[in-house]
Image (tube, rainbow, N blue to C red; front, side):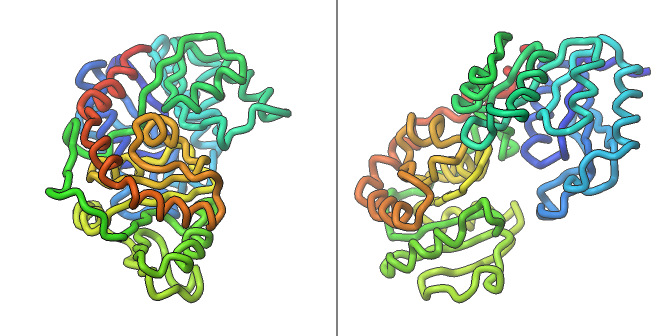
Length: 345
């Protein structure tokens, strides 16, 4: 039987997790990644990957992620714990039975990679009690950012915490950036993501009805029949392959993410690596760490279309300052810090 130095339980093997785990395996030793599900019904074909690079992958269920836990996946979790006694394990949340099985029965140290923040995750009532109980079983919390760290503080966690500064590595190369040659604002705004209620797309579109001199491009799982009639300055380009990501970002000046709920917002990090100042709602998990503290754009006052439209005007007035601040970020150090955080357990 193979002996592993670390086991990580994660919902699915997304492209950015695969890249992170590949780097973790270089410094942590032999790594087994256990995926709860093999695919997702709301993600693109190149979002989920099936094989690791430098680490082994074991899939608990072929059902889609949205189906939740199954008897088979729970049974396989017990089997893994019995086979690899004493091996440190990192789980990726507290919202699946498999994670609770690991925390309750695992014989080695257990870490929690926490992507939930106090913005969207309650610390009150029965949910708060259950989260606090779960944290009582955890040896180390890997918190994505400051709002995530604040959540575990509110829940009374007294163990070790490490801020990772992200939720994965969006590009193959450590420290990857692709800045445009010139810093200039031409009023071109970009949204990348799904058209689901928590993304607040309708408010974003309403905001651009007030901004006829600006252009908004909607990329990702967006269709005109889902959002209704669009103003002339709003265009939908739909899904694109990650091979073409540089073309999408480099054709725009500002990235906008007006979500009502967003645990982190990896796409914000992608936009910054292409040199785009960003506008985010105060509900976006990375708004404090990547936007407010680094002065890379604007955190809206709220999630209303009026607040979004005001931010779009304001970002143009200080565009050069935001763009220059983005170029000061040392992405190589941030990426390495995230990788080394996983070696702390």
